[in-house]
Amino acid sequence: MSPLTQIHIPLGNISEVSLSSSSPTTNVSTANVESSCSPVDVLVATTSTETPSTTAPKQTASTKVTISTETQTPYALMTQSNDPAPQVKVTPKRYPCNICNKDYSNYSNLRSHKKSHSGEKPFECKYCDKRFLHPHHLREHIRRHTGEKPFACSLCNKRFTIRGEVTMHMRSHTGEKPYACTFCDKKCSTHSDLKVHIRTHTGEKPFDCTICGKKFASAYILNAHHKTHTGEKPYNCNICGKRFAQSSQLTVHFRTHTGEKPYDCKHCNQRFTRNTELTIHMREHTGKVPYSCSICNRGFVYQSHYQAHMVKHSGEKPYKCVTCDKKFTTASYLQEHTRKHTGQKLFSCMHCDKTFTRAAFLQKHIRKHTGEKPYPCGICNKRFSSSNYLSTHMKKHAATQPPVMNNSNNMQNAIMQ
Image 1 (cartoon, rainbow, N blue to C red):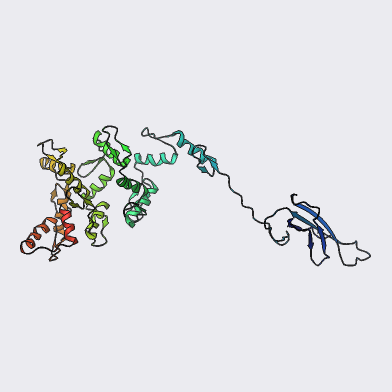
Image 2 (image 1 turned 135 degrees about the vertical axis):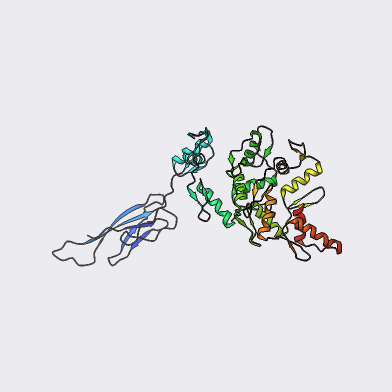
């Protein structure tokens, strides 16, 4: 007996199926099969053409034929003995949220997601009363209390409490800023920084101070502002005892003692303690003056100088010295003035034992040791260690001839303003 062979044939307009092989041809009629029927299995027996022997039984070949009513283009005639069955794609089950229609691949993720709608936060910190939706968020938070920092930067060995912080920190080394502003050419290293920056264009300030009602563009700035009401400064410098409201402020301040300058300019190799200082310095090379007074059209490189200038138009001096009642336009000017009364000198030179009341004074002093002269004259190319020296020098040219100012000079004027 020959093995059964199953052949899948669409019904369509076929009225007869012919099976050809070395065995005799067998005809299968489909005339009586309606197109609406399910696939039909037809068992056909064929008689061998070989003359049977007198001692052996008559051999027959049986073929099982499947006639399908499918109208789409079928697979070619296939037999189990030669070709594999076609692959069937199985769509995995999804679990949709009945509130926001977001779907998940498993039910446990859906159940966790639903807690974000209900406000449920089952995981509580044992050090404070803060609660979290997910246990891994609690673990990351607890490291803030314990000081554990298991993730290290492979370039500078700085350590972090969260793995994602390492990724963002690496961009400070590579300079990568993958998030671009659609309003201007500014790029940001994180998506959250971009969102905050865009609010400077839209004017959106969604975070309100519950004490004074002042609005802010980010929760981080609001948190820093709130500490001005409470007076809280939990971060303490172990060298000079100065306290700060934010850990980032302490980190930057500490570099004034160590002399660390991790950010370097690719054009002139000048180094800086903060990335924002490098960004501002780059404007000296590009000639960009981004802040302009709408009243007198005066341009400024630094936003703080622009803000202080705008206060001059209004005459407002909201910062008052408690010792002599002198008033100032900015808090930084008041802090510098207060040190004159206290005699406090927080900034020490790493090359000698001289100390200063301002970081800017220390930077000028250090240039005497290094010989650095970053301020060039645009007329005679003579270089100076401070913008004040350059300004005095330019007056010598002005007394003899009208100076031909270039972008560098315009930039220096903007810096001195």
